[in-house]
Length: 640
Ligand code: ACM
Image (cartoon, rainbow, N blue to C red):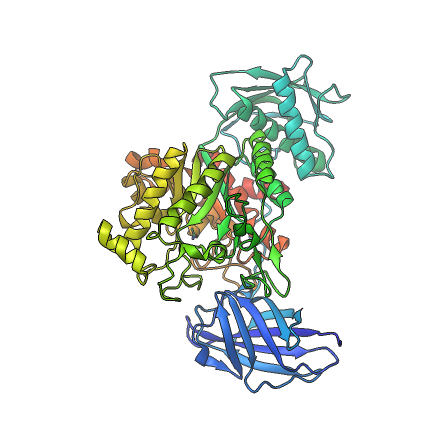
């Protein structure tokens, strides 16, 4: 067979500020005619109105997947191209990542071939580029520590020791902590010199460990002299954070001695500002190998963040092994042209698949705990359940009309049905396995973005509405979540969810922790209703948001036109809360939604240094935050 070699180029033409068209050109770069084929592409800018396609027929659209063919079935001769245009789109394109994410063609023999993507550009004005958004920065003190400590009073600086080592007679748990952070540094920076040793080092300096039960749980103090460093803490977390501070300073002073040195006298007194310092990671839209998740947890620890909110399920994939329902991962963890679930963003001609086994999860949880990171699992219900329902279609009402509602992401009938007894049997089995796997007190149950009108065409849901006097979709959702809350309590767990958990009457706020994501003002509103709150506003803390308004900058802009690192850094969640409600603010969290993050490079570009900006707000007192210092040190932080 002749080799298939095609490339798709796309342009955006604005009609109004909110509306425009995509103009495509598919080039046949192979040496045979391309006949009798279908083009499939995935794009967040979706076609809603098939009648607005020109010179192409839309055969099918499923969420972000589009399947097209030339109107007259015309072949493309070698060296020639097929031009077509589409309008009736769900959103305007404003950035290069608003176009095609993956594309492939299917030939008459059923074979599939990935095709190359050219640049996606605007046609009516030149694309603009973003200059560096983080300045060189400026240091107050010649040390590299991020997040910056609560009190820094080291004033004498000097040449760094070759390494730091455990003073003779250090207790077993301190030696274990030193070893733990030494291994953390080696994993994150394998090319760097080892900073810590368990035995004496010529040219090194001893660390004298001290227990001090007066210090805060995660707090520590460091006292510097040319003879030793004293590290005092009340427990394991404080010890490892003191060691992270030391290793950051030491490695920076070895690598960039003209900029950074090491304290020869003085003190650091440190403790975190918030108890909840989190980051969410969506492993449904993109598949992250276990090793990447483990590295991400290491990165959290290096930033002194202490919660991984692990978004394990969504429409595009179910990624956790559940023993009672192997089909959840056999079917729901796979997407591609030959799977039950179609290709979506990041998937082309080949299947994308992956999930975490229970054994892998247990090991990861234990490993994370040693560096003071807890893992909170999220099983996103009752919406965002396309993958779940692909595996277990009986969790919808068979009498419900197909396509009776659509989620904002374009999925139809993607919510498990509260009117069916088997829904609760399913939830009981899944959550009891999840509760066994994750020792963290909270299980996050999603609750976000259930489509307006969900279940209203389901006779079973209508029966439930009549029986329980429920008014509509939000009340049906709240009914389901109240039962889930009771179920979790029986398993010794507390319920966490997105802000919509409060809709339709909500659940009992006692012991419930909600994340304010849609807008910051929701934080104090939820607190007023009695919920504990973690602030994750899209306008500052969603790390998939674009960092400038320039076309060539990747990212989304539904929450804000731009979220540059400086905005993320300077945003103050506490500023949203009046004093009487401030005790309900438990902390802050970044969110990494991965629809658009189809490569490691894009992930790193979007996530860093904004993740460290959030980490500094989570740890450092407001009056000690300093953008210039942050800028001068953030490039030393690890990336995935
Ligand atoms: C969300 O961004 N749907 C919580």
